[in-house]
Length: 318
Image (cartoon, rainbow, N blue to C red; front, side, top):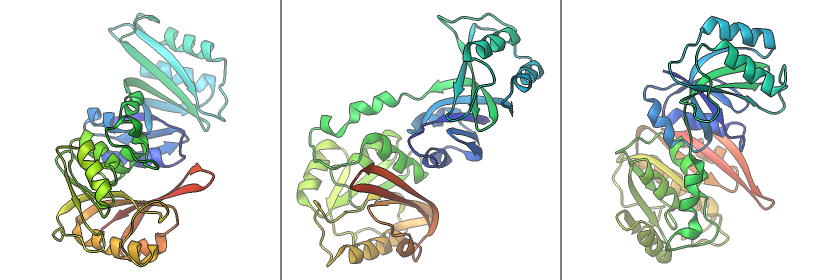
């Protein structure tokens, strides 16, 4: 089934890439993606998407073309419906928003309901194109607030927030039941998001205090003390890895220096990953040259967190 995604604007490319865990991306525009997804309900796991829709069609972003698309579709819902227009900056609407929504309502054969619609049709204007869809669900991104690190039994500053942690999990393409491993698990934030989508989780850290905290936050998980330069894990035994590498500022490391740690860690991650599996590596510096010695680089993203930290995110494949 082809689906239309209204994406978060928090990053220009990462939200579309995240969709690969549930389908195949066919086309993208600013804050918009079209993808073939065999199980639409699986899209509920996405953290960088606002709205998921059944893709109905597209046209150029002018009023006449939009009216023609609506006539050609001849939509006739059996339940009350509403119509919504979304403009993605800096796109211009060809007419006032309320006028376009009224035109949509008049072009659809059915009962309009603004108070209690059972169906929502949504038109997104982005980069010179109008995309039309029927809403399947709105992603409840507010639920991630309940997993805010400060609400967990064990808290440590400087950890990744749940929305980004979920995106890291999704970028690995891990599926429910798959073995997901974080070799620098800290207090377990990334592991928590992997568990939420049904993965079998395991994590390690060299800092005993972090392992104790991870076990408190994730009492039914496998968390153990280990040096990532020499992991006690069998070859080709893990389906997915996502981890936030130490920055060497407030974290414990055993290697001589960060470069040595990164080199040995990447070698170990390559060893334990199953063939055709993915690893997502986050750090504070560009290590794409080093990572390219061990993996194929699928994606590379930069994300500014604050003035002294820009995350570098690499999606790697065996």
